[in-house]
Image (cartoon, rainbow, N blue to C red; front, top):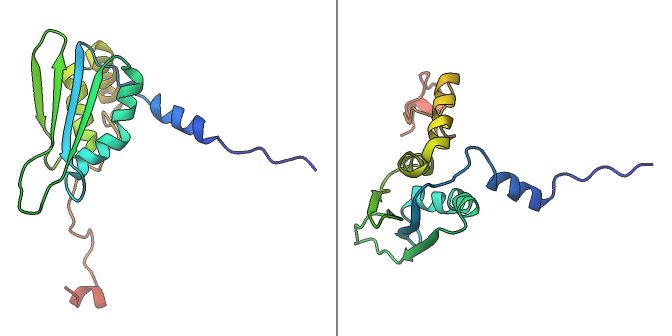
Length: 155
């Protein structure tokens, strides 16, 4: 009896994620500094840190990336921030408050993605696809059809 073929290895899955299109190559960026809450807040920035920053690191090994996870109490109201340091000495800051990770990635790539990113966005727009995979355009929590039964009377 032949042995069943094993599924993709964990390493191959990681490499597939790191090489996922679009390639996150940044042009003219020397450093990235991400500042966010250590826990219980800044969810889009935390998801960006987990999903997109490894792809950026893999595509840009020479960029200095610093992540500052700070303790934030419920009384504090500071916002998460991403700062790009460019090779020519200028800096650009992004406020990440209430943004999805896909929006953060798209803004970063719009700023420093270069010609390959411009080509990617043109191809996606021409094909009618979203530029990056993310949440649906409508964040409406209203049900599409009227609720009936117990759901209609429960708060």
